Image (cartoon, rainbow, N blue to C red; front, side, top):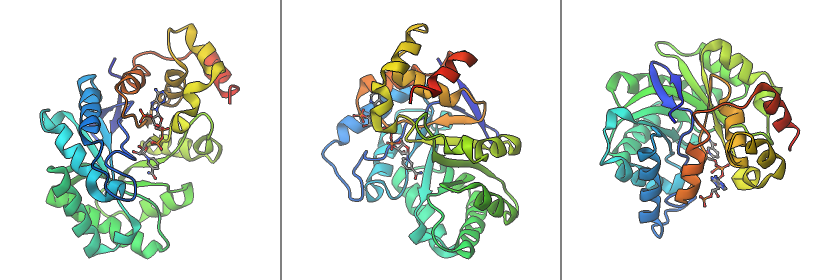
Length: 272
Ligand code: NAP
């Protein structure tokens, strides 16, 4: 089932576990903690080693839940992603924010992303330099960005001093193929960077697509699995669907370990 991709020198599963809404949205929500922890643990038991969270999610509670969920597992086998919100950009506040995230997670962060570009390139630069120092300190292991277009990504790469930007997490789904259309995906491939696709199921809409369901029949796969396989088909793409329902977690994990034919991948594009 495992279908691995490279991030830096690490290998992560092509499907990760998203956590937006797990532990709350803008504010903490403690009412589904047990269910959330179980869903994350179930995903890990199925072999998924990539978990995506952010300081913004549930105002930190999502990170706390991820920290709790991973406790029974071998930490070295997992790859935890978190993100800094633009209000914390700047050298000192970035150091502080990363340490606070690591504390909530109860562990180091494998990949730390600038969640959105914010409004100042100078602040992005200071933050990236802070992240390089955080790598040296062992608080984070890799540096990445999120929601950066091609031009901003290139500019950001130029200011790096000792480490590389290894990931750009952007919205990418069969219904929103902006990374293909803008050349971002192709550029990242050439640079050896991983594109982490968020909202890959368009909040569940693609799971209900009859045309994708039809394509999936040949493979014994569902519409959701076809939609996710479309994305991870590329060598440098991983997708991070969010699911709190165990049957969804299992279904999403089943998007790995097989491959749509080139023709069916083309057909899938015409389904949306
Ligand atoms: P998504 O993964 O496309 O959709 C999540 C929704 O789809 C949930 O309601 C989930 O239901 C449902 N779902 C999951 N698997 C399903 C399946 N197999 N069949 C039917 N429905 C299914 O959207 P998302 O949460 O926006 O994106 C995924 C992750 O990307 C987020 O959780 C977050 O970690 C990350 N993200 C990052 C950014 C950024 O700015 N960097 C922005 C947005 C999202 P249940 O939960 O009820 O199972």
